Length: 225
Image (cartoon, rainbow, N blue to C red):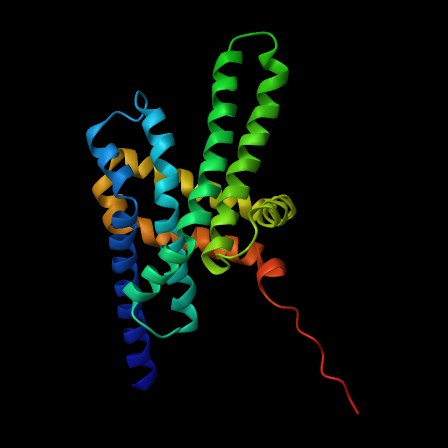
């Protein structure tokens, strides 16, 4: 009976963390949520690009909550989120602003070259650069959530290298984010109320595994006398 009770408690704990994470994600991404419910993303994309970096600290806070859940790290979820948000506010915003600016430039270039002869050669390169930028940007937010004091140039180099090295995990995370984005556009209430936390947990778990070499201290084998 005791293992059964532990299983039930784990299920309820997971559901509680998921619901709280969804609530915190909505609060931390409130500018984007307001835009989503009041504007057409296809026509208002410049507003989305300007607003997205402001939501990066909230995403880092959600990643911090997810990081503490499997290990059973103590403390209130709200307190953990608030501490991570404050610590990551500046670096996460700067990091997301840089990644968003690069993606906007690549997207504008791709739109300008669409249908032209030069686009046949340039568009595949632009797509690859956009995927690398998105993957590196995602990994960087996971790093900042755990190491908010890390230097952003060092974060960029490490995340770019690991995003390419673990390309299959990067691709899986981006596909999950794409699924979440489609669900947000089609069914925002379901996406924000139910699906966001489980999908983001998959993204965080993939990214955290990719970043093990950078975030986890190396273990040394015990020496024998």
